[in-house]
Every structure is written in C-alpha cells, then in structure tokens.
Length: 452
Image (cartoon, rainbow, N blue to C red):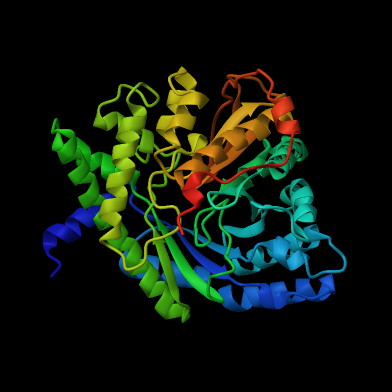
C-alpha cells in the first residue's frame, strides 16, 4: 500500500530533483510501406505514421496532468529507412526523410528516429544510398534523427562503413555549420545497436519488433545524487545499495507511464529503458553523481571505477522494477547534455581519452562531443573504430556522436539549446590514422562471438 511518505518523496523528486520520464517513444514498422514507386512509399509512410501516432502527444500530456509526472519528450521510431529504400526503383532516401519530417510535424512529436542503416557485415541495396544522403537529410529536416550500425560482436566491424561514416559526419557538420553543426547532434554511429532503444538520436524500430510498440525511457540523475548526499560518508557497498533502491523507484514510475500509455493507445508495451539521462540543467547531471561519490571533478583518476559502480547499481535496481527492461539501460555520459561534464571539459579535467575509458563500463559511448572543425575525416573514422572495438569485444552497445565544430578550435563553444545543450570544443590526438582507415575490409568478430 502506498503511504504518505512515499507520495511526498515522489513529489520532492519531481519538484526539486529533476525526476522525469525522458521520453515515450512509439515504434512503428514501415515494412508494409515498401513499393517500387517512391511516391507510393512516401504516401504510405506518412499515412501509417500519422494514423498510429496521431494521439501520442495528447496521451502523454493527459498522463502528465493526471499523475503529475513530467514527460519531457514524445517521439517516434521507425523501421531503418535503408530497408524501405531498397524496394524503390528511384533510390532517393531524402524524399523519405522529408516525409518523416512532415509526419513528425503533423503528430507534434519532438523527434522521429530511424533514418538508419544496419551495415555491420556489409552493404545491402539501399544502405550506401542512405548513408551518402545523411548530410543532406539532416540539413533539410529539424526533427529527423539518423543512425548507422557499423559493427557487432557477432559480425565484427565493417571498416568500409567506418571510413564512409567519417566523411559523412564531417559533411553533415559542413552542411549545418550555420546552425552550430546541429546535423551531427542528430547522427549517431553504433556498434551492437539495440532494436528497442527509445532514446535519440539512435532510436529505430527493429525488424524483430511488433508492428507498433510503446517504449519508455526514464531519467533521474538528480534524484540519485540527492539520495547519496543525504546518506553522507557511507562506504561504497552502501553507495551501491542507495543507487539500487533509487533506481527501483525511478523505474517503477517509468513502468507506470509505459503501461498506461500502452493501454490508452491500444498498442503493446515494449520496454522501459532505465538509463540515467542527464540534461544541461544544474542538478541533473551524471557527472555530479560521480563527484558526490567522492571525486573532486569528473575525469579525475577513479572516474571509471565510480561510473562502473553507478552503472551496475542502476541496472540491478531497475530490473526488479519492470517486467521488460531493454534499450540501453545504464548511465549516459553525453558531454554537452550534462552540466557536470560540460564544466569538467571546460576545466580540462575531462579529456576524450578518459571518456573513451569510461565508455567501457557505461551505456553507449562517446556522445555529444564537440571536436575541432578541421578534424580530418579519417580521424573521425578512427574514433568510431576505437569505440566500436570496445563494444565488439565487450559484447555491449557503444556509439559515437561527434560534432566537428566547423570554423572553431579547441576551447571555442557550440550551443544547441534545449536538451542538446552546448559546450567547449575538446582537443583530439592529431597523429594520423589515415593508412589504417584506408585499408578497408572488415575487422573479424572476436572469440566472444562463438557462444553457440
């Protein structure tokens, strides 16, 4: 039975500690929209998305009002568009991107993800066309997000795709340079991409998913930090227990929202992603949790160990609170989206090499990092390859979302606004990996792939 203490505790979490449901994401399959005529494809895509998602935003707003739970974003994810493009005689994926943008506007959602390709083992029809179109698609749309999966533990790493994505990221930055290179903030490169991720920019609706599904992503770094602050100088076992109990409470709220949304829209409930997703707001930072654990500044020696403890405890607490946990689930470390990370990067305590080490023990990877505008494409490709190797060998999801800050140098700032935040341009190692990247081919799957 819910008591008064639990109710007051939840109210405090929401009002003072930035507790929210970060997103309700409706996944929609577009496989039945395939046709050789791209005009028919665009018509079917628009009709199906708007038919399924027409009440998504209103439903989320109604649940917010009734339960008093902030729901920050309402989003849509769709079947990887490269699969849809493959059926068309005219392979012009930008036309479908524009259709997705129109559907997003009609439904009133914040973002629509799935302008994606899965090329971990090679290029199928439509994949290369979609990847080469990403810079233009990101420049002519505001709500469309893109992702490309270039590796997996089972398949290895497609280095031809890695090379292509280095150029794609750089070209996307150039085409949106007049808007602080915002296109790259909507583009992520994955290894081991999950098919049920509700978070942008990496959300897409996997081929093994139902025709339509509701996935929910929760948040709550501020709640975890506040709980640790109240506990004082306890040992690390107690720290882990506090995080687990807090994650349980956060995830229960996400489960409630997910089930209620599913019931009202008559759409199956998929998963709750229990990731701690920060924002640029003060008091809503994963970096500040690590500092509450005992670090003077995020990026100091000990950061990787503290993050490993946090990530593990979040998962252990969250899995007890929901019947279906999925997506990414853990702690995110997007630099420009986290007030503590931004500060640590500005002071020089947090460097990209340390961030790479941290990605071995947390959710996702090198996320929302501003790099110098003159960074060569092969360096971007090499960063992608390094991060994919961590994911491949450790059988976990890793990703790269870099923003080459065209016309800016180390120490300069980019500002995206909203949840995407902003922050300093970070220094990169300038020694060239060009010969390594130019070899192409595929890095073979590791021994971990032979688990059958």
